[in-house]
Every structure is written in structure tokens, then in C-alpha cells.
Amino acid sequence: MTLNATPTPGSLLISPKDHTLIMIDFQSQMSFATKSIDAVNLRNNAALVAHAAAGFGVSTILTTVAEKTFSGPMFTEITEAFPGQALLDRTSMNTWEDASVIKEINRIGKKRLVMCGLWTSVCIVGPSLSALDQGFEVYVIADACGDISTEAHDRAMDRMVQAGVKPMTSLQYLLELQRDWARTETYEMTTGIAKKFGGAYGLGIIYAKTMFGASEGH
Image: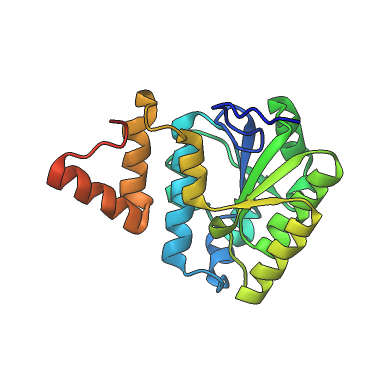
């Protein structure tokens, strides 16, 4: 059979309207013991994901565990991207076992879910495996998750990938939402987020634009 290539994106690529982002337990108490990624990178990557989702209008659920009594507030880098959005607070370690979260997932109605949070081996493994078991498609943003050790994070990612989770990174998430620099309506937003939270890549954008007015779309 002859293959006929077409200039269209593959169905496994994400787009702004085809998924729900769930950001889980980015809280002070959870971050104190996180050792698989340093706190600066963790906060930066979480902020990149949050601002990308907010900028592209991705349906997003923010959830915490025992916010007032134990774990503390969600990172401000995340909440400032979603001003006024309610945080769904839980008692369950597994987000998928919380009725209010499931109610919101069903209300939004997206079969594809993207997750990130703390800790990978508990707060992300639980809902990811549970969602897969109920027929959802799950992506996990690996560098916007963290755990008490590199071993714990890596084994959690291995377990999820073996079960069918698709791993990705925070910068990949942003650029996959943009996908084409000719999309001028989101170009400045995407490069702006990258300049602020995109590390060395962001510095490269700042340099290119400052020194010779570069523009990826032209």
C-alpha cells in the first residue's frame, strides 16, 4: 500500500481544546521534602505550565490536599495565572477518589487529561492509573512533578508509562499548544511565557529579538 503524507498534525499531539489540565498539590508542605527536582526549577516549570494553559484557554482543575490544616497554599505562580478560580481541596491522597474533582472532570467532559503535581509516586500515580482504568487518555508533565527522591520519581514515571501514560515536559507542553509560529494571535504570548519561564531557551529568544529583531514566524 502506498502511503500518502499530508501536512496535518497527528492525533496524539495535544491542542488547547482537546484536554483538561489537572494541577495537583503544588503546596509548601509537599515541596519541602521534594528532592528529585530543586525548588526553583519546580516552581518555574509549574508556572510555565499554568501560564501556558491559562493563555491558551485550556480547561484547568486546581486541586489541593488539606490546604488549611496541613499542606499550605498552592504556589502563587500557579494561582496568579487563574485569578478567582476555586481550588478543590481534598482529604484523599488519590485525587480520583474525590467526588468534587470527578464532578468537575465530568462537567468539562474531556477524555484526554494532562496532569502534574507533587508527589509523583502518590498524587500523580493515583489519579493517572485510576483515569486510565476508566478509559481516559492521560499525559503527565514529568518535569512539573517531583518526589522525595529521584528514585521515587523515576519509578513512578516508569510505572505510569508502562500502564499507558504519555510523558512530556513543561516546555514541550507550551510549544505543542502553539505548534506553528505563524499563529500570530498567540505568538507574543507564547514567546513571552518562554522568555519569563523558559530558562536558556527564553534567554535565546530575548537575545535574538534584542540583537537582530528575530521572529520565528517570518
